[in-house]
Image 1 (cartoon, rainbow, N blue to C red):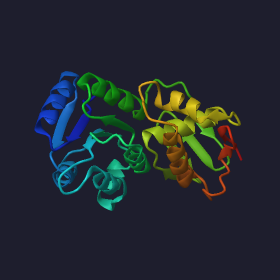
Image 2: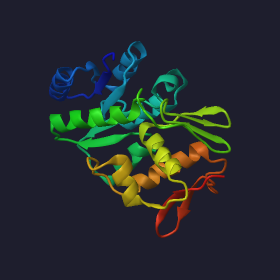
Image 3: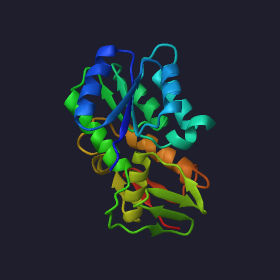
Length: 236
């Protein structure tokens, strides 16, 4: 299997050096940038499999950079679904939710343990990388096709771009149609024990997922709210 590439985008030299050393010891190829503008130049030349992105960058902050990578025509083909882990000294809930609205996969608050960060990098890449030995079969609904081997979703024959978390969330729902999940259960099964966010994270991801697969996100047919409990997947 070819080496996976991680891009570190942080204006603190020490953090970049330490994280680079740990990643390279684990067999990753590492590229880095100290600002959002330099990161865009770097990512034009080299393809990254995961981004470690600081929020507080000079000039262009991490949110603005993530928005460009997820939406700008120049980058969206390659970076619409590439995992992003935010690195920040700001731990407010509003920052986390702003990141998740942009499709950020995880969030690590400084100061952090490099070993913990590497564990999160591996966990996110493991979830987002198709497994060649997966025994799970694709699921077909009237308008929706979900392929776990390719981690691909088709809606009316058109590819839908989902982040790693969004795909995992949809796949969990689709494998258990009509089963009601609480937000806590979804956090435990999709994000796992290593995630220290809160239940509002689930709400944001449900909204993003509905915007991508529902004909009318305000009147969802697939992912339905069970008031006072949680959510369920209802096949058409």
